[in-house]
Image 1 (tube, rainbow, N blue to C red):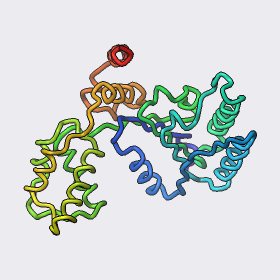
Image 2 (cartoon, rainbow, N blue to C red):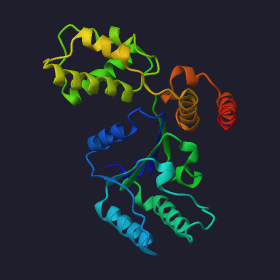
Image 3 (tube, rainbow, N blue to C red):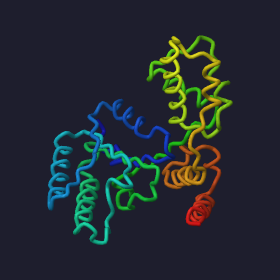
Length: 266
């Protein structure tokens, strides 16, 4: 009941495939408040976009306390200066959202969750203190033990039986060290598909080893490193960072980000 200590909002960032959307929905469900996902409210008709947004914001006020989820926030919320590309609609939408998010009378009643793999593209106005106050960075599992934990949670959610005695951690140690939660889910979906076609009742060690060896996720090393470092750079709590990133100073992270930006341009 202490609404005065609840953050106005959260910026959830991290590389693609780290489960940002899933974890936010789990967290909001544990809070016991309704979850509203803001999707495309823009219209081709003059004035309709602003009217849609006004209706949405009115509903949020009426529902409070409510968690508001905005996926791909870097693209969904727009920017302050759009160079008049749409007759000023984007600027007016941005101004209305920023004013609504920054009204501290709504603290604890409307809690924003802005999710993105590119927090550097989210306007500073929306991620400053008083709006998206807490910046939380999520990263792929770093060890085979962590990957095994992710595997087990996803296996249970997908309801895929596994043969007793299967040493999942040892098998996942053979996987690529950069495997994300999405990659692990991809392996499990393939296992389920193989079970369906072969008539098997459970996944055994031999099948799991074969699928892990065969699975080759798309590799974009520079983009993933950039998303990982920019998430660490934006994170407002060093205690939430993996050891390898917590040991780097903000200056070191910033220098490497500049190198990656140059490499991507070239």
